[in-house]
Length: 79
Image 1: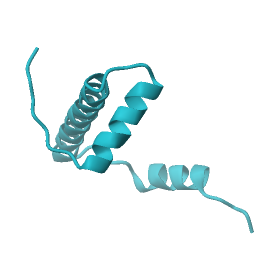
Image 2: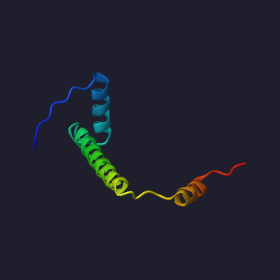
Image 3: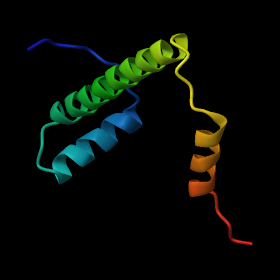
């Protein structure tokens, strides 16, 4: 396991300690879990962006009719 040093505010440190205690977990486990989730989300977003760029480069766009269908499906006709 690698050691990473992180400077956080006293307020965040207190919140971390309180949350860890309330959940019966170590103060180390919460930041590790949060960082892991963040890294997975960022990797997913990067992969999706790269996939979308490839589609765009290939000219693979939604037609006006397809866009209109989605807009109609999700529009709110409250009036």
